Amino acid sequence: MQNPSVTDLLQSWRQGDAEALEDLFPMVYRELVSLSQNLFAGERAGHTLQPTALVHEAYLRLVSADVDWRHRAHFFAIAAQTMRRILVDHARKQGAEKRGGEWLRTTLSDGISVDGAVPSELLDLDRALEQLAIQDPRSARAAELHYFGGLSHQDTAEVLEVSAATVDRDLRLARAWLRRALTEEEKIDGAQDEDGS
Image 1 (cartoon, one colour):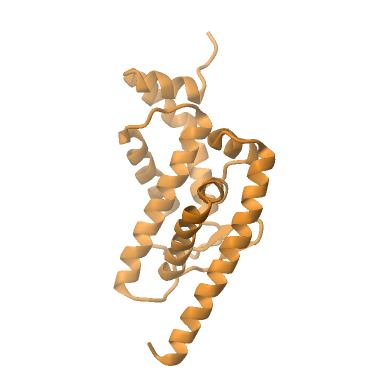
Image 2 (tube, helix red, strand yellow; image 1 turned 90 degrees about the horizontal axis):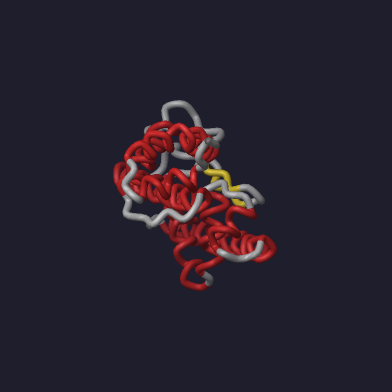
């Protein structure tokens, strides 16, 4: 018998096969760790949230979620969204303690980066994604899947049920939109700092 795929295991688990969950974990763990490490690339030692902790927290949330898993790309899409929510929640907690200081370095490929981001900057990115989702939900979702989830254009297309060319257009739009939104946010923050507010 051929080894089951991630999709097969997700569907078996969804149908009540507890052993499928045990078989699933080692298959997805390496990819989740890789995704987490990409989010933490270049981070300085001493960060209060470690990549492994992020993976474990995300996995616990994923296995307890009531989701009708469709396929492997769908699982990693939900994982990307879950990791983003965990990072944003962590940033909010850190921001409540003290504004500034060093936090997560999040690099979004293709020219969008939040280098050495403090919690407020990660929250700015989250707000920008939420604003983009109001204007163009599919582009925002594509950005989340590709940048936070590390999904390829093809996997992103599969999750969104569109062509890879459409994903490429959506990502170009999202990059431009997010750059503009983050630049405007920096100008606002700079003006507030000059005013002493």
